Amino acid sequence: SSKLVQKSERQSWEKSIDFLFSSSGYCIGLSNLWRFPYLCFENGGGAFLIPYLFFTCVFAIPMIILEASFGQSFRFGVIKTWERIPIFKGIAFAQLVANLYASSSCIILLTWITKYLVSSVSSNLPWTSCENEWNTKHCVPLLSSDNSTNNVTLSELRISAAEEFWSYMVAYEDWRYFWCYHQCKAVVCFRHEVLGKSRGLEHIGSLRPDLVLYLSLIWVACYFVIFKGIKWSSKVVYVTATLPVVLIIVVTIRGCTLDGAWEGLRFYLYPDLSKLMNFKVWITAAAQVTYSTTIGNGILLFLASCNKRNQNFCKDALIIAAANALTSFISGLAVFSSLGFLATKLNTTMAAVASSGPGFVFIAYPQSISLLPFPQVWSFLFFLTLLLLGFDSQFVNVEYLLYFLIDGSKRLRSRRWNREILGALICFFNFLIGLSMVSEGGIYVFEIFNRYGYAGWCTFLLCGCELVAISWFYGLDIHFKEIENMIGTTRGKFLLKMSWKFISPFICMVAVIFYLSGFKLLKIGSYLYPPWAQCLAHLLSVSTVIAIPGYAVYIKLKS
Image 1 (cartoon, helix red, strand yellow):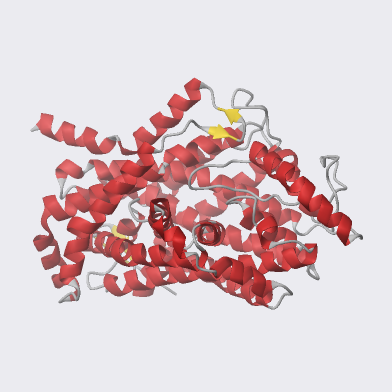
Image 2 (cartoon, helix red, strand yellow):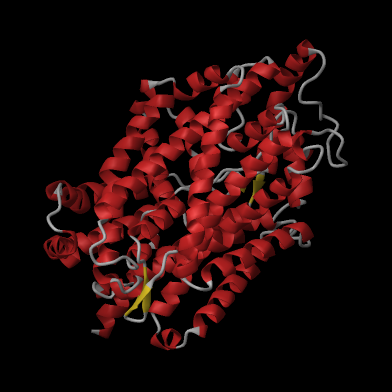
């Protein structure tokens, strides 16, 4: 078993593989399975891999190396590390706020997934049935006995189904969910059975008892993973980081053996090089790389601060980035082979099957596996994969919050039992925030947190501030001397300097301008948020990064 040693009142990894597994487990999450396949399909198929791999190489890998090396060089934790650049210490507090928003809202996704996971063991999968009390009059069986009738139903009702989907579901910038397909069976299931969705934010309604129960269980599980520190979580992550990848490979192999799978794969990977002339495609690729590798939010810096002094973080960065990209690509194979099978069974086109927007990975995939022998088994494996992908990211996030407070306070470090109590308080506080998102109007609160709590422009701004702080204020010459003291001579030193000092900051600046120039009012389908909620949403975004200039001003006034 992995044991840890105490140094300077702080736990650290004993085995280098602990950092690698924890970082990979955190980076490889839900976005690899549901977001990348859709973006690849929408933005040129196989051609999308060109900007995706480009930003992985010139932006993500250098950023992972920068964060890991900076955290490992001091081994103090996030807040103590940024004290080395006092005017940019606000970055630490900005990352704290961003991760607080993420930990309290992203767990709602796991709550929904858990409900679907539990439903998967029922004799009749509810999102494929027309026999539930909440089904509408438009509901028809997935496969009618008369294929010609089924084709007419698909062509005539596809548009109305999509409209009902967008009026019921969340359609936000970076996280667009959830499962519906084919005459709104799954849409109505999600709206009525899962959410009990109200008419708007003004009608918050009552709590959903089953969602409150699942939310409680997940937070309890998170607590028991993190309350003993990385001594215990480093063991749990071996399972949560590897099992989802194994399950993805299993469903990929199964999907590729299905009738019509190759048509789906061709639709997924067929390169449309004309898409590369669209500037938005490149920004989308940069955003997906940034989001999936989780750079900029301080987590990798925190995990690296637990490393031994001579940990080879450059090799780890290459493995993390490669594992993340490969998992995303394989997930696309799993999803689109399944879509090809579904299109074949319904005797329709891939365009019709994949026309429901970014949430289609949760729409068509559960539907297609419901047509397989023993659908409950495959449905259970699918949602278990989603749950594990999100769970390890969740408890690493909470562990970050816990260590942030402990590392920043000598009083909290002085007594061992403070870790257990503080961990419980963090989980309970986040649980209370989450209660607002499991009510009948909770989806509207959830939308605000996920679209504005850690918005796309905030992500790039945090990355940009890290780059400027270390490259231009701390000094790359000083930092490379520390790198050489840790791991010796670094290959590609000139390329890293160019990326950290010029290329990556430029990418961040362009992305921030692009996002802010594309301002839109907050809507869910046809529901437009009231003015006070619009203001609250934007204040939430500003609150994520306001600590950076705020603390800099404080330092100047204090001096």
